[in-house]
Image (cartoon, rainbow, N blue to C red; front, side):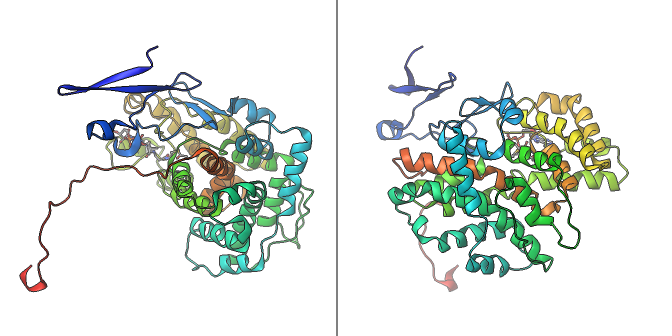
Length: 428
Ligand code: ACO
């Protein structure tokens, strides 16, 4: 294939280098275009813009393929677990057993939060959403470990192993600390030798007065949700994280930015919005058809449907749909909204509106149903997404810190007022 494209503007031609990826994706490198021609490219919403070269995750949205570091998501979902996959995503290869032991020991070492971080979490306004608290908690965490949070790229990279383990471990504790605080309860002690998810469920829900064994099917369902969320290349929150990192900011600040970006209902907040939507449909006695009609008329959106990149079934949704039945059966929970979700999916997938626009269920369509069955309050669902995404954000922070040369800074086309003189108040 040609290694160059040519752009012709009027009488002038500009040769542009073609960049090719491992999986034959192609891009036209326009980085010198403005210097040579005075033109920039325009792509509102970045739908057709490659912002970087990355080695972390590959997605083929037309075919519904998702791979972390070359491993297919279905393979990892069946054979790996969240901590092993986190290592893979951040460090590039599956760990040897010695590497995995060391990583797990580091995670186990950092389960507790320093008192000043607990105080920061609990002093947030009562009505602040858990995602706001999480962002504040991450900033406070960095403040409690100043040697990991220097904004000196070389130093922050040298301490990456420690800060990554600290964040992946205590992001659970931040979530549980806030949840318990609102219930006027303390986070109970955990056994560091237990699994990541078992300890998180203990921190969130265990009651001394009613000790209960957590069945492995429950911890496995949560582990699967975290694993499926571990990375998803240049989405809104990861791009935010990379943008912040490109300015030289430390991992804690970069991840706090990622959390804020994830919060929105068109991104990670969709998992909450799906449950609200399904409950509304249930409460209205609708079989889903009225809701689908209003989505087609543009009055509402079918939450958990559609994706900027997938024009096919999101492979994560396929895995979660299957896991939903197993998890609910293991928990002995029957969910009327699962029935509604299945019916909505079935109706939408044969409706020309959704077919023509290639709108399929995304990862958020079924994850909320499992999280609800596990007992998580709806407004914590997006926090769980953030816990799962933390290794991905850290991997991208590391990639920028290791290879990034430039601060990220898009251009714009200014459409505002031309130059005008300042007028004193009386003359306006
Ligand atoms: N319900 C109904 N119509 C939809 C939906 C939906 N969920 N999603 C897209 N459409 C329609 C749009 O109205 C538009 O129709 P038009 O061409 O007639 O104007 C067309 O499909 C294209 O939609 P865009 O918004 O341009 O698609 P985009 O790629 O920008 O948006 C997004 C992707 C934001 C995910 C969108 O599909 C959406 O809002 N989905 C619902 C929210 C959601 O589930 N978000 C989670 C995404 S996954 C994640 O972030 C983890």
